[in-house]
Image 1 (spheres, one colour):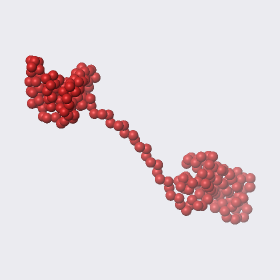
Image 2 (tube, rainbow, N blue to C red; image 1 turned 180 degrees about the horizontal axis):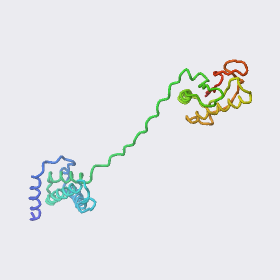
Image 3 (cartoon, rainbow, N blue to C red; image 1 turned 90 degrees about the horizontal axis):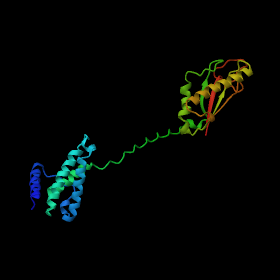
Image 4 (cartoon, rainbow, N blue to C red; image 1 turned 90 degrees about the vertical axis):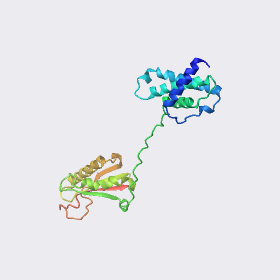
Length: 239
């Protein structure tokens, strides 16, 4: 046996004593010597290349340490193989540190699943009534009442559940004032409500806006009489 081989075997024995038995990664010891030689030599060459790679030398990880260990153990295993000896310990550690040197296989990317849409609101009996909202106005005013948002919320919140896709906004006045003035006033009231519905998310194309003046009072009164029930805007909905 050549002196260099003897030195390698002695060095290998000393190193083996310093490490506990490693968990077996791949059982190279069951392979034929002729098949082991190129496999071990390839791992040694890769480990040697890694120990001189600037990226590995400057990394903050453990790759350099693993590469150094793989180079040592694969070199020892190669020395044994030159004498057709399959040294189990050096082969196992060669394979182990070679695997660690290359790192674990990249994990599959995690694909974030989109949040499911909220369930639709259940259909209620209110969906069967065409009159979706009524807003009442002060005398000679187009200012929306204080509860306008709360009243109109029923329309926007139940749009999907009720299947509503078109809305008619009609303004009315009481019988005080002239017919021509009340026609204009009722229209402006309807437009104020339609603007608030659009601000809540309804499309302008889904709205039909008109004013009926004092021609369709909710409560019959004498001409010229002020009546808060008649000063209103009605929103009807349909599929």
